[in-house]
Length: 166
Image 1 (tube, helix red, strand yellow):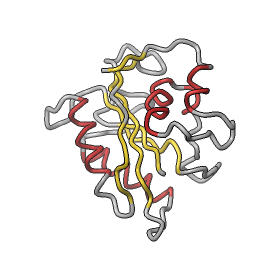
Image 2: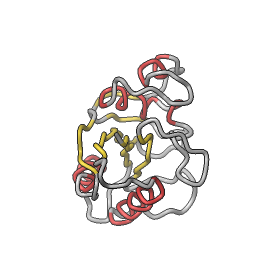
Image 3: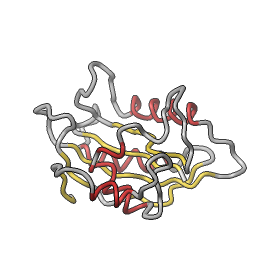
Image 4: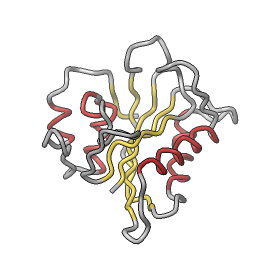
């Protein structure tokens, strides 16, 4: 299973609100060769991390089944996600800038990868409620391959963060 974080906090160039952009991006993920959409979490509204004065984000996690007959290269998947972001108006300017679309590989099964990019599992996923809450919905049995804890257990150990179901 490939777990992809989906988020946005500003309208895209087409004028669609962040939630609609995210929904369209999830539909596009289902078209990636070798991947099939298995589940999408509920949508969450979350404050930017780190705090920045930007608009709140809409976030979810998509779980994608990986076709065992089609090799999945993490770097290739990352490149495809970045092209999809660009297609939805994402422009990379400064770190943590507001985004029309943000797609992150949270994990690919139990794969551990320190380099090259993407680092897996995502190096900050275990610190972020906006990742862990939706991740626990779509993959309740997923265990962080380094920390040995489920998303729900990791979420329970976090300090309070601004997050609510949309």
